[in-house]
Amino acid sequence: MSRPSEARWPYLPAERREGLPESVVTERNWRVQQLLPGSWRGATSVLISNGQHHIVVDSGMPHESHLLVSALESRGIHPCDVRTVINTHFHVDHVLNNNLFAGSLIYATQQSYDWCQSLYSDLADDENWEKLVLKYYPETFEYEKAKEHMAKLRKLALRWWDAKRLGAPEQFRWIETQVLPEGIKALVTSGHVPGHLSLLVETGAGVTIVAGDALLSREHEEEVATMIPYDRKGFSLDRARLLTMGGRILPGHDREFTLTLGQPQDA
Image 1 (cartoon, rainbow, N blue to C red):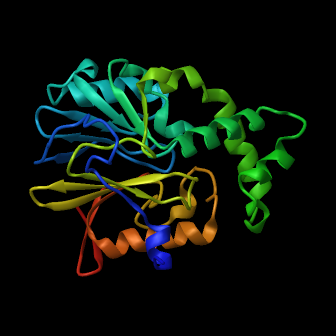
Image 2: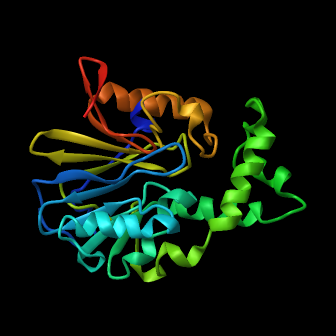
């Protein structure tokens, strides 16, 4: 029997799984760069590239599309050059520029996709949303001013959510059954959202962690305008585990930083 930590933190290996076609070739020497800086109201967008295979992690909000394209083009990359998009999860601030990459494969968990689709559908129910939201966030009223907070985030979701911007069905490759390029490992960090992913990327300087919203920021996470955790205890465990790994970390809503001897420093 696996230990609890192993069950909570399953690695989804990059190696080809038995019975699956080998859809990716060996690709190492990844470089990780921030495209859009994370903030209290906007998600971090990341470029992972080895010079030939370009990957965008989390595509941001529609009003940021020109910034994302500009950040790519400043590196000599056009949206049509991006072969792969990876979504850590499907909250609105992480996925609504997927449609910029119509020729890309989109990797994510189907669990997160289905969960968020259902959440936003229920949030649109004007009469019953307060009751329905407890299906997704059963700990809502353990938080101070939870009702007011959720009402504000509901307005944001109703303003921006557009499933057509997520990408075409044929683009999706679900992590539950598919593989990522070699040198990139997906780590299930489900405290924020069921099926949430963090990424461990092998680079020439060591492993870089693309945390997504498993680690919102270095500190003052309560100031980030995002949904409360799906699982408060699990979220705390996710955060602690990522910080314990150390090294270079790109949070979901903050500047990147490097942990040396347990002390956070600006990267």
